[in-house]
Length: 429
Image (cartoon, rainbow, N blue to C red; front, side, top):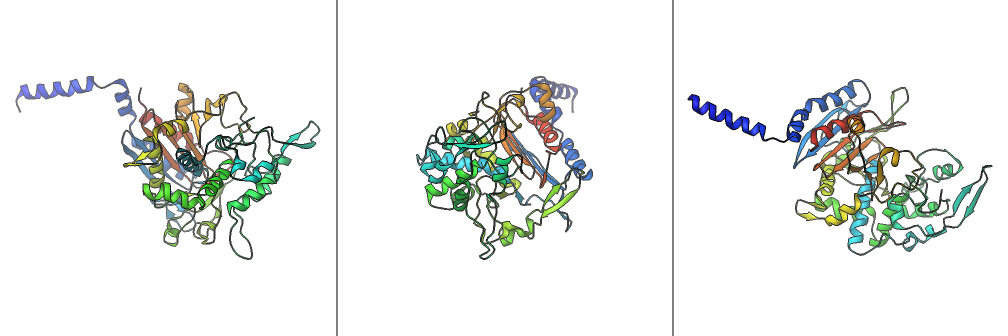
């Protein structure tokens, strides 16, 4: 090759480099998949997790997807891309999407009282505890609305946090989750759960505060009442079938059983205890009638990536529109505000975050916080009890998913580390 051609090619190359923006160069410098691989691998080797799967989407394509460790420790079966996971509370954004779909069809309004669809809810009294610990009951100042449920400001408790007080003990003991009738083997439906719920007190007046609660489960039941179908059927018809989410449902089919992960509990000492064998699970019970809009779905990383892409792209996936873009904009903005107390210290002014419809929303950021946990302004998403997380970043046209399968008293450090690395790889300035 002649020297003039070499000089010309070098000139073209140099011009291309010099015309790259600072953000392009920064993204290239951070786009090192080895950092993510090392994080996942080390977390398994250090026995901080048993198995993990992760996915990062950026600017039109999946830029990272990998898995490490075991989905079934007892049988020494590795995590694979088609592993099925309990996503627990990552069900909530899916339920919120169904509710917003019904809203677009004018089958409901978020200002509707819940009692319009579930009359028993109107009977719930509000508990007050005085300085001596005496509990009194009073009527609701106003009716609980569907929006109150969407924002966890209904006043309802949950029953998953143990016996922190006499009121949370009532929710803890009410059997609002999976319960099987010993004679029939059939698990209770959400219709029966509403009767149990209606007999419990509210923890505060509707609208007074944010408290993570059974609210989204109630919204799932509202959808059932409106459509006259089980929540699983509604989700299948409106989301899973048209979008091709073939491994997302409220139950495990026989042909899926071998891919279902086992679930564990991580003790404070760092030991993992098996709490639900994936090959002997209630999710495989054909008589399971419990379809919880707050925590009942199972899914794979590819399936949930379809849902994340739907939200990222403004309610449309591969030509199929589920929600209008204006509806997505409404879902991923802060509706709770910063003036009401967050009674569980996960969100609020101290964390520069609020709550939208179905998930939290980051409303501010600092360089130190971004380096620590990668939660940028506009990030919307949620997590699941078995330490699954996802977020949507429409500003940077990206999203991330991290799937684990164990309960624990504290969030694992891999959450913040993964988000920080993913944000560094996908951010634009």
